[in-house]
Length: 72
Image (cartoon, rainbow, N blue to C red; front, top):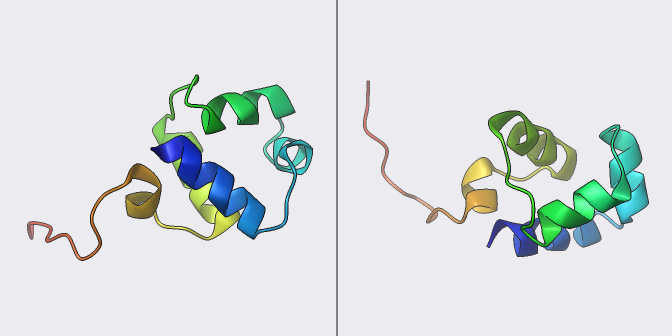
């Protein structure tokens, strides 16, 4: 699920795998593995992708919009 969303967000930004990889200081193969869900996302990488693509982590992770969150 997150792989498809990453790919769509990247394409919406008009970026290639190589461009994203350069910005994230990694390889295009690593970005491809995220997009094909062959590599799991860690919290730091989620934040990086969300900032880069201007998307929410809820969207990236497939959580429903308007999901109620408990108050602290």
